[in-house]
Length: 314
Image (cartoon, rainbow, N blue to C red; front, side, top):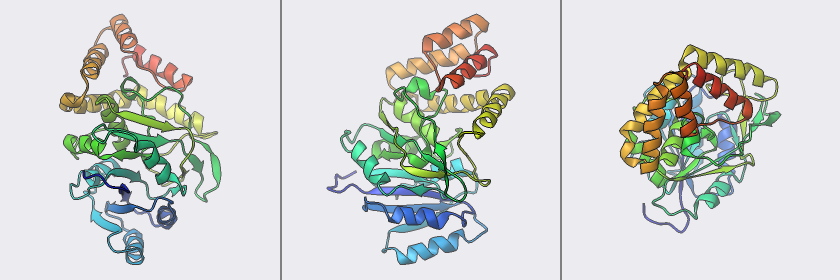
């Protein structure tokens, strides 16, 4: 990418039947204090008024500010990856955007200022906490806070980088594009967290929220908060016991192997040791996991990881 005095941000918004909250999100993007951005929208086959709303905003915003393309109708992960992999989208930074959130006015400004000091050839990623709100935009509480520094060992079993908060540089985008849009990973944001840390890049975690993360019945992916926490814990345990967690790890590890050349030598060894440990017998398996150093946050989640290791569910 050519250097720019004012780096441009390409906002990557994916939509699907988002008419109820889309205008709130678009208005919050328009109100950003950092104004050097363009928006690319990939619609995944909406049957409601989503496309009409997008058309209205494209008309009232300046020419070239908003571009609309069509996704492959294969789910939100494929939609985000396919949009990110479109080579006609070229910017200094990229920001994933969900259709039903509300961004704080300084969201882009904070993220860009955080990443600007990074060398342009080093993959870098910014992520933050969120303020959880209900369908009527009333606060429910903050998303969980993570205290350990983001790293590849952590990324192997847990994602701390929520996609709707992410801003990443062009070097990180190139990793996603080299991996391709058809990679069968669990989530686009987790995949980017794995790639950036695996390649020796930098992940910045901001403990201050930068957006209002709406929780409602139509959410494809929600967050845990307050009274929902116990239900999410039970759901997570069920997924681990049924093998969903292990199956997801299988897919992501295979994807990492295809990107092995981009990993640091140390992280190549970590992947090899982690994969070997997963297939061993009881005591060698536990020893292997301990030697790799995998962990999750908070403490109750780490205990769940230990239980999953005991029963070969990682």
